[in-house]
Length: 359
Ligand SMILES: [Fe+2]
Image (cartoon, rainbow, N blue to C red; front, top):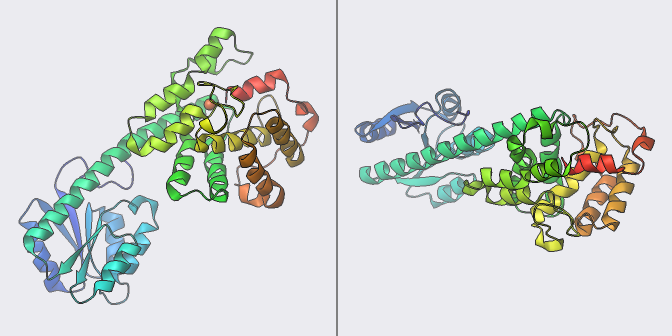
């Protein structure tokens, strides 16, 4: 169970936090909701609301807009800034005479609103709907958490990668932003960074951890990991775009990759973006068979491989532009260049290329 979930996520009594500076309003809502299946908690100001939400993990927050000091809009905005409360249902309590409050509430991420004076039946129905939605996202979160944990197990087992997955998440989002992609795509790229190799969980250690070259049969097993990973994640609708990255991250622009041998724009865009940062990370990080390459060698190899038809030339151009003119954007602390012994990896040997295809 992750931090976002309440103690009641599994189906017990739902907790509703009522935030209003007017004691009479809180008492009224308590009388309505307390008579139903809800446990009602209260906060009498914005600061108290933030403290109680962090401590008590309510399932739904009913949030008055008009409060002294920290008003409901600001409380909502601060909650949405925190990843763990991104999906917490927040119902704004607005006054009939203040239509702007509804607009402002929605702008800062409120889930719904109720206009005061409210109708008891409507209030109960809205809160019940919000609780149902919260429980659905909690269940989804449980499933996602298992997948992410599984991906971390694979990463740890692989042993060669350090913060590989986190770097890939960071790099693909930077490249996605540079290409002007919308939030949903960036989110898919972030998840793809962590989950792309999750299918390796089904590869026997004898193959996954083999030090030498893989034989044909072993390669056949290795090549299954994108399809296996896509299958593992495909049941989740929220993973729809991420599944493309998982399934196609070993395709090549010229059609020479696996598992489907797709070429050019038939390879989904997010997978093509991911491939670029994946190969960049392989070149710029230390691996058992090579040191971290200096930037000029990374740039040269990326250009050579693009000329050989491996990577999408337009995406490579955008990436190289960042790498050459604004490389600080790519940096995360774990990604320090550890060596400059470029000669060891000057031309990509067959062995090194095989390792990269196994990544
Ligand atoms: Fe892979």
